[in-house]
Image 1: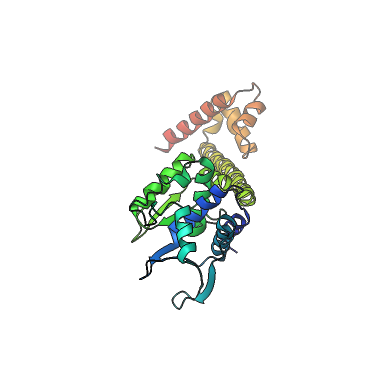
Image 2: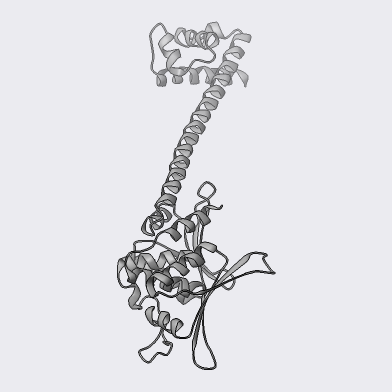
Amino acid sequence: MSFSAEVKEELTEYIPRGRHCQIAELAAIIVFCGRIRITETGNYRLLIHTENIFTGRKFYTLLEKAFGIKGEVSIRRSSVKNTLIYTILIKNKEAAEVLAGIKFLDKDGSLRDDYSLVSNLIVQNNCCKKAFVRGAFLAAGSIGDPEKSYHFEIVVKDETQAEELITILSELKINAKPVKRKNHYPVYLKESDVISEFLGITEAHISLMKFENVRIYKEVKNKVNRKVNCETANIKKTASAAAKQLDDIYYLKNINKLDKLPDGLKELAKLRMENPDATLKELGELLSEPLGKSGVNHRLNKISQIAEENRV
């Protein structure tokens, strides 16, 4: 099972206590994967289509708890994707009751002209906003495996809907961004800490713990890798410098110039030949009159300078 499916399975098990929150979560599922139809006789038909069994299960459960209604469930296999599609149908008076409950009907029982999510009374409280975005994720969201990448998105049908969802998320201190992709408008989260915050506010606590464990492991691993890479680079740099120093010293020795160096340089040159892997600090401590790293480095540079002058 993918991490995204695991999150949805966990969210399916969480049922808000308040009916107002149950209705807000129902509304989100209807908004993002539902269809509203009016029959020739003027009756309403409300259908939910989803390929995710957890989304269908959550909608059915919330429908029964909030309204005491049992939807008609049917399952068919898609000939295009070869996946199962779950459909839940509510008809006539029961459909009208649900639509009225989510504030999609006017007082006279007709569909509202304004479907604005932001101004809808069902998402005015913070708890209901959290329930709504939980339903939005169940209906149209996905989250990547944190071991591979940090990616989270909820795919909506148009730019207006994307902006409204972003507004609701921002009121919950979740920074989301829109992007146009063909005929869809995904609302996405990229930063790992923001995704973590979303999992927390939607009550996906087990998934949050797993996400955080992976995130911490990756951060520690990255820090260790950076430190190792830095130390490896320093070792290579030190080894390269030592090899160059030895090359210069042996060159001076071969042309009989090594013994003609000043005593301080000659002593250091011989110590370098005797201790090819020693650090500057270690060489400095071996001198008859100990020197610090900068002093040793200065003398070695002077030896290299003399070698270069003799090579010309």
